Length: 164
Image (cartoon, rainbow, N blue to C red; front, side, top):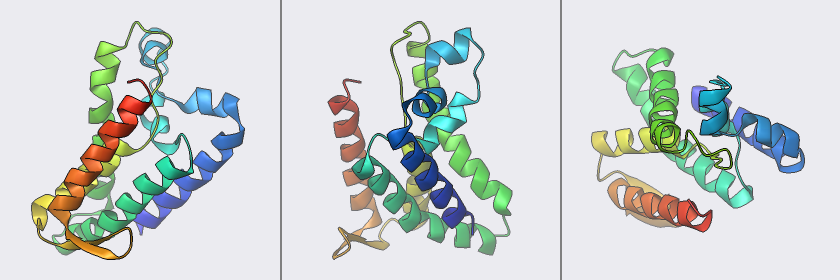
């Protein structure tokens, strides 16, 4: 399943980047480098890099929790793996557009993480089944729509904490 593959690759690359600052810098989204040096690959690679274990865990747990459902639903609806990958990577790209436009002349701005991609999967799931339950902190069952709001709050908190 694509969810497991994406999760595994993301965890592996993030773990490597935790101790390899050069690779971290090379894969991060730097709108300045994307626009001025034409390093377009960064629009995708930044989604495989996370700041720390908590950032990685929250994104991958959320992705796993909702990704498996969306992957099965897409398959049931007759969509192929391409549609699922388009949702995931399309969400990552669309979420990067604001930074690419606003921060294109800021050589010091850097963004990392799969939050845009994970949000695309999460909110597709909520759209299809808003009252579906997820175990919050692996114990408390909450509707997907509530989890989605909590996830958005977490993303906002992390963005502000990083000075974004």
